[in-house]
Image 1 (cartoon, helix red, strand yellow):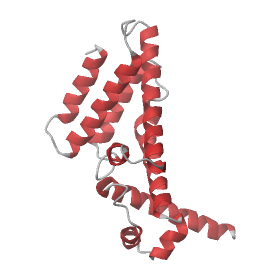
Image 2 (image 1 turned 90 degrees about the vertical axis):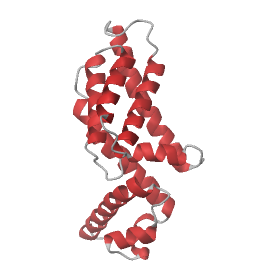
Image 3 (image 1 turned 60 degrees about the horizontal axis):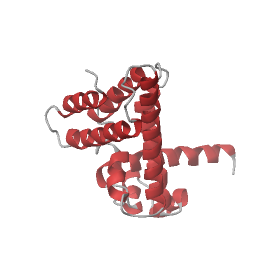
Image 4 (image 1 turned 180 degrees about the horizontal axis):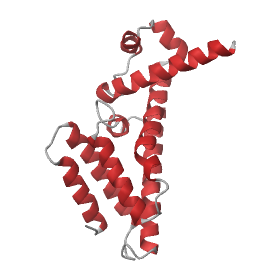
Length: 198
């Protein structure tokens, strides 16, 4: 395939994935249909099939893009901060900011997909579980560093605190989408209370 044609295909695919990401944030990955997406981007169903091959391939690609964008929006801005409590607190604020800014119209697709596929074995559940494990590992690493630095008590259980922080972030995502007054502020307070800091 000539280079220009390959570039055009890659650009078209990237555009379709961005549209799919926004659509899936509202309708869920299971609600992401090739027919609806074809209408949204002004392509034929055959054209969408040609880019992805199957609905599952489209779903997998869309979820991977959701994780990449989440990483870019939440983790990348704080990754060079001092490890431990300073980076952990900055990460939590960045996470809540992501939800509050409603980067995707339907809220965090990672949160939505966790609910959608938690009881449905298969490649998508595997991807969701892997993304969750990676986020837990990042949280746990900074919690351990904070304990080692003396910023958190030695009896702190990093896995338990990471679980709590992740749960609070997910709850905040849902509450913010439901336009619950003060949801982000309440979540921030609860996260700091879980860490024993003000």
